[in-house]
Length: 145
Image: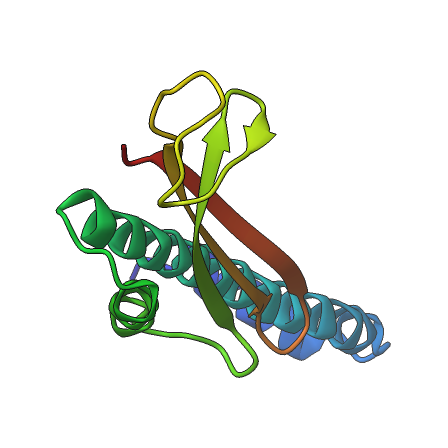
């Protein structure tokens, strides 16, 4: 009859009546539990951050494909954000520039050129879980004209 290592360890644990093993076990279990929950929270944060970045890309992609309504661009981003946390938000805006100065949509720049148009999508949310959380902002600015 062959005795396995596990069986030997269990016999030693059963014979020990000083309580040291039980105290060590009681000290290690909470650390393992917190570690497990922490790993889960970090995984949650990673998935939520990925979804957030996808939402910002969806908003910008709508405008890059010819869309001009910023409300629709925001809706596209919101729909693409599969696991938007409570309090998460996405805003999309269009801005115009004449060189480094601000311009307007239907007015030529002082040098006679058409102003350059940019779309900026900004998503903000608190990511994480029960033990670990992080406030994150994702911004993407793209020239569309």
